[in-house]
Amino acid sequence: LGSCNFFAYQFKHHVGTVVREAELSGLNTTSGAASGGGEGLISSARDVRTFTSIVAGSELVNGQGGVWPQLYYALRCGDALAAESIVKQYTAANNNNNNSNGDDSFSEVDPAVLHIISQLVELQQDQQTIFGDSTNGNTRSPRQVEKS
Picture 1 (cartoon, rainbow, N blue to C red):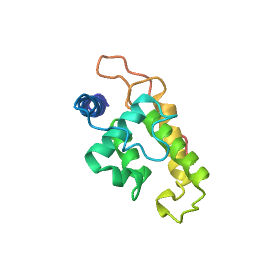
Picture 2: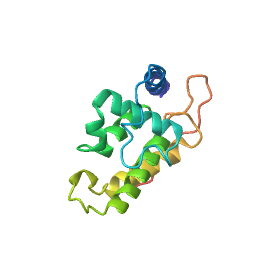
Picture 3: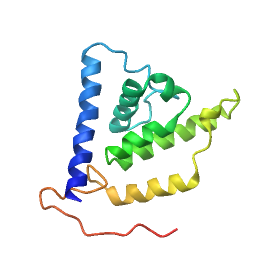
């Protein structure tokens, strides 16, 4: 798990660097903030949302694709807490929108996905990634994900 933790942390650092460089260069990083902007998101989730907008385009974040590219990058960072924050905000926006405009991009997130993310959040706890901090010998005891 040490190598998984290393690569997840490295990618999380890359995401943060890309977002900070974009902010410093004057790029409008709020344009990619889909469905209510970054309000209600934890900082790492805001970074993931902005990063997704930068690398994939705000059209993908704000329209087709919706939550899925953001979830991919959050989990690629090993950050289940960011993934949970993104899904909660997406679900709230979906409930507020009520598909009144006929836009399928606000389709319901499958409950199985929500369950998996909640299990990953339990595994992550207060660690930087879901893989724990095993690079400095500070490993946590192995836990098994709850069977569904």
